[in-house]
Length: 123
Image (cartoon, rainbow, N blue to C red; front, side):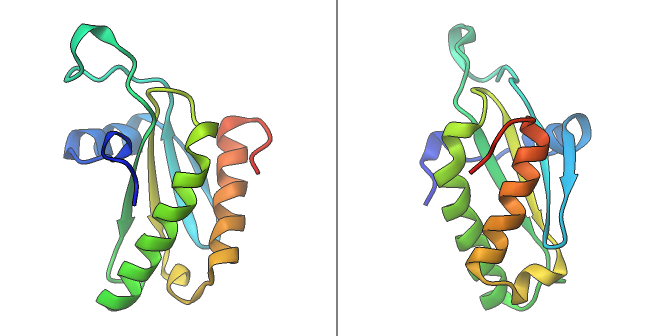
């Protein structure tokens, strides 16, 4: 599980990351990143930690398959939170091929997308 402070929950946050953020597409997923945003709900102008959310549609598969993909993506993002700038919003959208992919394939695509978005070396 992701810690509570690292979860995207509000529709506005998802929309902000998708509409105003940068995007990197891979065969299994698309990653949207809006770097260093200020959260109006955090008092005192404190920069919140990086937050992540996931979109896994019915195109990925049935409920069991979708939940499996979400669990894998949550685990992968949790390991990579330190790479993300504070205050950034990340939305990971799984594509239909993600349902048949294993953990290593999802990790490779996620790393490649984050490397492209951050411009540095991701694991």
